[in-house]
Length: 220
Ligand SMILES: N[C@@H](CCC(=O)N[C@@H](CS)C(=O)NCC(=O)O)C(=O)O
Image 1 (spheres, rainbow, N blue to C red):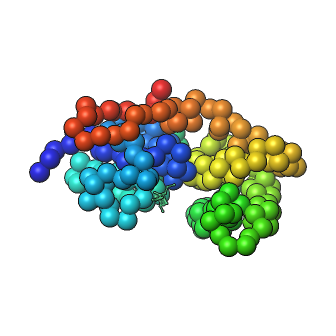
Image 2: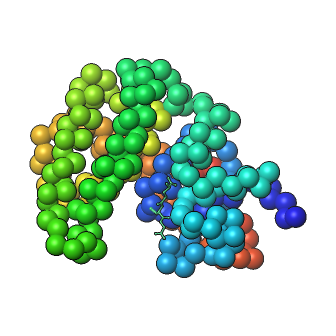
């Protein structure tokens, strides 16, 4: 058995699921060994632990494998919720879950078609872009009442969905920035410009077996 000093995180910098996992690991302050990978060339070591081949994957010291970003987030918050990501607020648990699912399934599917129309047969990308406007309007309405989605400070629900909204904006920033969604845009730009986000977007060289491990708590 190989004993790892710290949990190992397989990650891909630009993946929205990996971003939210890194944000949660940062919020809890735990040190991990970061292994940056390329999706086109997944290391055997990753596939052995998690044959489905998605990132993020966190391998705990107990050798338990967490290969869903939300499971990594829950694990991190259970250790230390020092940033109060789990504070009660204007949304109850069912409402928070509904938003998470809407973004992860409906919004993400529309986003894929808007961002990568060539991967689909005969589709109008703007049709899928505009489908997401209804979801964004709902978020904008929630943000009218509170600076963040659930409570006055940014918490789990904000960080868990923000990478997908960012990805949506990135397809056509000019168009997004012209939308009449002032509360949502303010919320988004505040996270994009935060030092927390900059820290989790730091670049690491691609992981290679036998390299000296890189440890981080994503704090700077
Ligand atoms: N439900 C998974 C989804 C993770 C996911 O789909 N990640 C993408 C990268 S953004 C991936 O690894 N895709 C595999 C591939 O492209 O080969 C989670 O929440 O962790």
